[in-house]
Image (cartoon, rainbow, N blue to C red):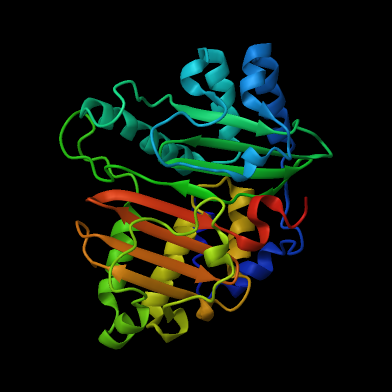
Amino acid sequence: MQLKRRMVLAGAAAATAALALPTTAQAVSSTSVVARAREFVALLSPAQRDVALFGFDDPLRARWNYFGARPKPGLRLEQMRSDKQEAALGLLSELLDRDGMAKFDRVRVLQDVLAERGAGPSDRNAGRFSFALFGSPSDTDPWGLRVEGHHLSLSFTMRGNEVVSVAPSSFSSNPNAVRGGRHDGLVALRMEHEGAARLRRDLSARNAERATIAARPFRNILATAGREGRLFDAAPEGVALGDLHPAQRDLALRLVETYAVDHLVAPLAAQQAARIREGDPETIRLGWAGGTEVGQQMYYRLHGPTFVIELATNPPEPDHLHTIRHDPERHLGRHVV
């Protein structure tokens, strides 16, 4: 935890040098991930393997989708006995740290909140999250893991026992802040929502104008599956972080870490902290559209040399948040597999 806090990007050159991380493949060795994945697969019945396992080159691997309450491809937690659930969650815990697993649980709990409110399918629940493996967990060959459900999509690409990509990834929420009921007070994505709004309100009038990229907020994120190129290939828009006050720049970079670093286990967190520092951080741009207060419809984008991050409130509910974090060059590990 302290490692990630120490890696707030601004002025982190000393931390970068100390880490001496590879910059070519940005791979992190994790034999435990392979072992955990094999343990999970070994527990599955033949019928469950047919549901959970796909070829590495299956087109489905590129069709990530956290929208809607319909079950996602793969074997769902609600379809597993307790031992298989434990194995699935143990596999995920090799990639997400304690904060990341807690964030995962908050998104899951919101399914129960919606069910209690009668919103959407009556049988929606916190177990409706799917585990899908692409290729066989291997010491040498490429394979992937996707964990996905309503408002969650986490894609990990491995080359043998090396984790080479952790994007695209999304933790989203509805409602983001729970009021009333047994989960009263739960906030799923505090920094992503409140921290970003605070940053936008703190901009000078001139920089607020530079940051504005549309008259109205977009109704959803733009870089959805199959349409990532509309931002991957586009020039960054908005105000450059180099034009911000240093404290504002630090907050913007801290926001990037929230999406790219904070939920990962220490080796992956260090890897991703180094990754988002590549290039000149002052050229990262913050684009904004819509309101600046929690409770208002808003959209923002952080676009840097190695990432595209979006958040959009989903009308008509301003507390319904969709987010995404991409790494265009290393999308689903395409730089090495």
